[in-house]
Image (cartoon, rainbow, N blue to C red; front, side, top):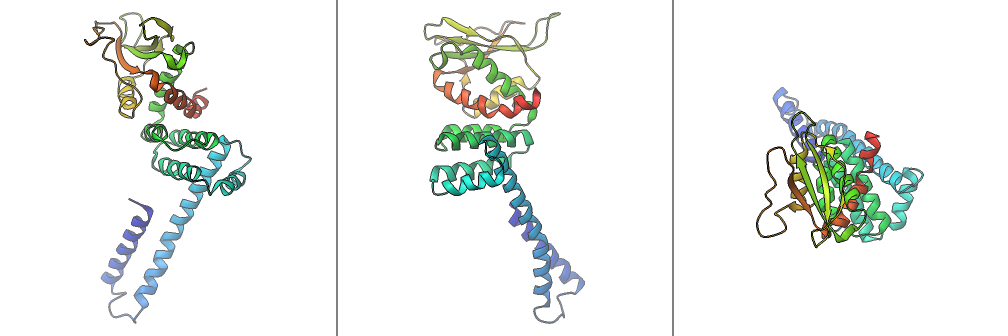
Length: 267
């Protein structure tokens, strides 16, 4: 529900209360409207102030990642580029995503997303939208796990980069040795391994977060190198969960940049 809708409900409730107590019925013409006007102004003004404060904080955060001195510096930057449709679109869409995010850390990541697109002059394309959507619905625990997956992916693909296929493997644990862990393997088209990350602890939300990434366009379920699905779900052994194609490489690197506040929060 929008703030305007909430304000309207409050005013409607006030009107019902005034009718019930007789403040409207039998009063002089226009008196009820005057009372309601005062009530509406008292309720809407705080909402407007709250919205302005939130917009101000949004500009402050974006300005920080744009390396502007303060919100005034960011406002000047905005004024100078206001005629740029791509710039305005990035700010508008980014603010809406930040407003809908329910975790403060996700808000920070969305501000990095906006600043990154503004700095590079990129359009608010599919990559912007799907990254923003993923960040918007993630809480701190989710973001921490996504960051770990991105770090493992970057480590595994650092040699050949966009020319490789990244596979996320997950092991639910080896008895008497260690708990659940995961790692990422990079393959060339010839199925030759070109890189592998270290084994990283897999938190309880790992498999759900992998599905969440996939549902927002980051990779797809790994179905093997051939027509038959991979036979890797032996008891205690690793199972392949997610396939990150060469076409996903740029999006994964961008997502890793957007998650910089997560690394700052956990360092």
